[in-house]
Length: 107
Image (cartoon, rainbow, N blue to C red):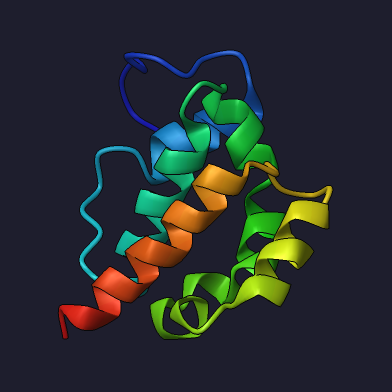
């Protein structure tokens, strides 16, 4: 990275996010859905917590494929609520499924 970070110093995970992702446009559907979903899960938590769990979130939510997530049902919600690798908040999980269905509906 050139220059000085405006934030994100001190933690390699945060620094990498700052230098490689933050402020860069995301234009593809899957990337946008992932950002939207992770932002929702981050509400009330530290961004570092979410970044540390990102691989688990990707695995749990079908690599943030909106069509796949839109098809999730009650068994998937139960699976997600039991997944210790992600934030297990029913409202946030259900919002992610609703957002996937909305994204598919925009096609």
